[in-house]
Image (cartoon, rainbow, N blue to C red; front, side, top):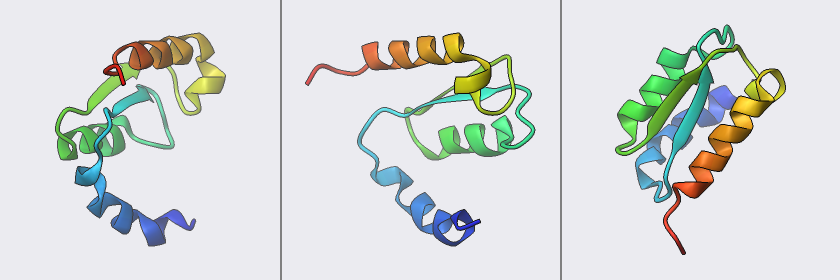
Length: 81
């Protein structure tokens, strides 16, 4: 509920992000629409990537193996420090 009040401020700062952004969404998420939230974020952030997988909301709970694989691949894709 508090998100509504701060989301516009957060959105204004998206282009300030300096880290790679990779987004994982379930194709059947009925709480957060992959197109409305996921694709919209990719369109606002140059270089951001969206990956859709089978599943709904709360992928760490409903698709733990696929979520873990996504996280590991994301970490491997980071540039060395």
